[in-house]
Length: 212
Image (cartoon, rainbow, N blue to C red; front, side, top):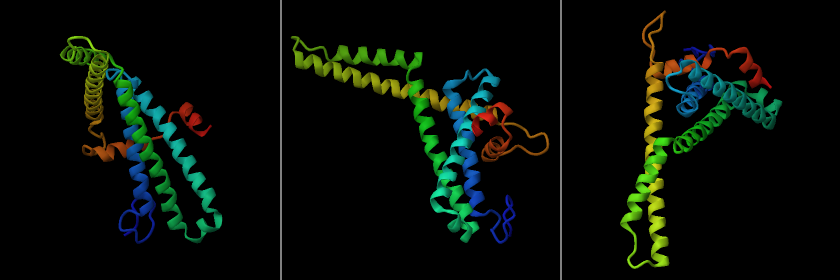
């Protein structure tokens, strides 16, 4: 059975390279949603779309650069010796870059959401509560230091908990909003929606930015 994406013969329906590329497309779209959890107001569809398009342009450019570097290291002779394997290796290099980017976008989102008003308020509340529980009597410099450290740790834990909650909630909202009824067919699965979204052409200005 040929590959349904590139039509490579005897690929079992989907060749290795296209399987990697589909996963890369999924991650590109997911990273756009992750970035939108803090870069855009969720009630502003145009703003959300702008963030997603920008992330997509950036990641497509970055993954292409990684593939180009891999090709340079491998050399034209090695790539030409087995084109199918070379295509899969290049696609896998792009996938690895996308996986790394996903972790970076997630870390960035959690860091930014940890600076939100909600997270700051929870930090202060947890800090005060823990600090008041450990006020030493009589006052002792070492005991005060330990009390402050305990309060800071409690505050940081509370901040991180709020950031993770905001992240999960907002990402789920964006995913639900991405649910749609395709006008020409049935409701698409989440993976199909991501792949379809990531594969659509970029606006001209972002395409130029990604190519620069």
